Image (cartoon, rainbow, N blue to C red; front, side, top):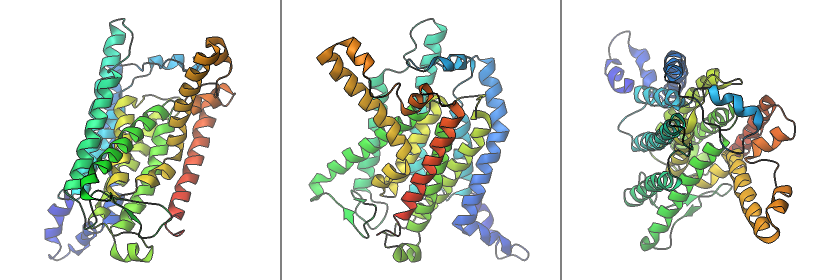
Length: 382
């Protein structure tokens, strides 16, 4: 929005410096700083309100006993993340850019699902009932609906000269995967739905330790910011042998806003946390990452950038699958004694093994940085 308000003054004397607002890099930096500062401004207000309303965290079943004391920590801090990201994006991004609008819409949709889930959990807790939150089927319907809508829109209304129903592969230059015929475009819609649902749930599962999910999303968002900038420039995309996506560079601003909001949120969410993001934040951030990867036609790259998220999700899936198999074949006692992990998701496994919570978080951040460097290396290893 600032771009539209200030650029008309560029031709006037002493206002030539306003040309800076025409550069994506400047506006991305502005979005990151703005989101960071907004968390400092609105964070204390929202946290104070959450404490007053006694919206305390609901501890998941199977969580280590050391986490029981966190039941007194307020949740739904994802409102801080949503507010900071959206406001800074509106201020610094071009609002006529479909990439930005779709990414923001996806984040808001997923955040709304998470907010409703958190609200129901807290309402059930106060009523003395089992705090299951939003029925899993209803939550899944909301996630799938977004994936279907986004996939169908990109299929029928491509954002660039490339086919809407298409994706690319890391390590390969100018390799575009497209359904064999236009009639099979629905396969792409299903693929987008799977990515959206899987990514949002993976971030949600990872959000189990103070600062873990926020730090990893900040790393992932910074990585995708670089990709968005490269894909949106003709010269850079030609040099690195990647497809040019006209207009995608504006996603750099959105990615920077997500990164800034996550870093600012860590001020309150680092151990011991003053507030948790809840499903409001984790589903919103997962939806944001998924939409960015989908819009950049880099869904498979998300497996590398979000390697820690993938590992966390797979640990839960593997644990449940093996447990059910052994329970059916050998009985409950055998299944309990021969679990794949001491506790799932993966971060709780290392906690049970004796790692301190802060050790797990920082070490997972380091692994996340390594995944980010590996993802960036694919630009040259083509």
